[in-house]
Structure formats: structure tokens, C-alpha cells
Length: 140
Image 1: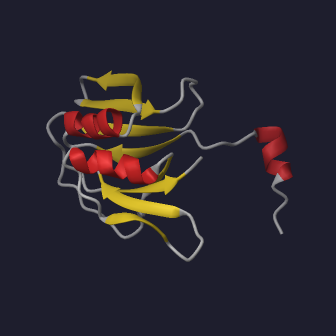
Image 2: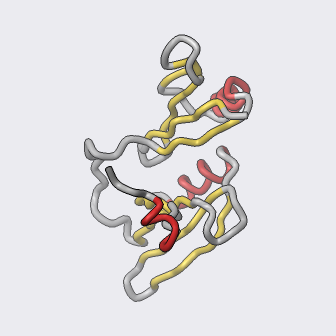
Image 3: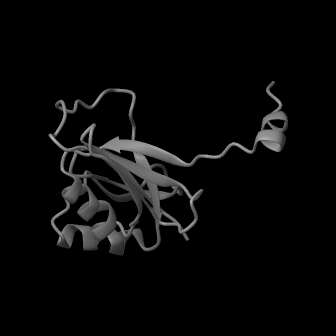
């Protein structure tokens, strides 16, 4: 058995961000910030390499979990969705109302809000503009 305290105590690892490629940065920012309520935290431009990194999230501290959007200015190679990626999980209050609001904005639900099992947490599924799956979870 792994003794996690031997890792956590001296090194304090924590999840900082996950990266998604963004061919259409404006559409991705519109989805995550305009529809899901995140905000842009910082942007790093690499003019010689012709790409940008845009960090978005809900928190205000540098170490709060974030999503990094990697945008190649010329579009980059075609994106293919592999079998290893699953989804981003985002907790929301009033999941039914939130999903109704998304639908009013033209976002299709891949799965309407419902529990996965009797008495379980209510979840819904949507996709971002690049086709990445987002799991919305009922949260307090």
C-alpha cells in the first residue's frame, strides 16, 4: 500500500490545470467563459512559435484549478479525439435550470440531467465547441 502522507506532507502536490487544444479560441472562450461562467486568468503569447496559452477557471488564486487552452494561430493539425480522454467535470447548483439556460443558448445536451443510478448524483453531458465532453454534476 502506498503511504500518500509521505508524498503529500513534504511535497504538497495538487492539481493545477488540464490542457485542451483550441482551434477556435473565441468559440472556446465564449463557451467556457460566456456560458459556463469561467473567466480568463492569464494569457501567454508565443509570437515566434505562433501559439497562445490561455488559462481560464473559476478561482482567483494562481494555484486554483484551471483549464489551459492551447491555441495555435494557424489552426495547427486536425484534432482527433482519442479514447483516453473522458471529460471535464464541473459542479453546478440547480443543474436543471443551468441545462435549460444552456439549451436556450443553443447548446445541445448529450445527456439530460438525471441520476446515473437510483438515488445517485444528477449529471448531464454537453460538448464544447471542439467536441470535448463536459460532465455537469449537481452540486450544492
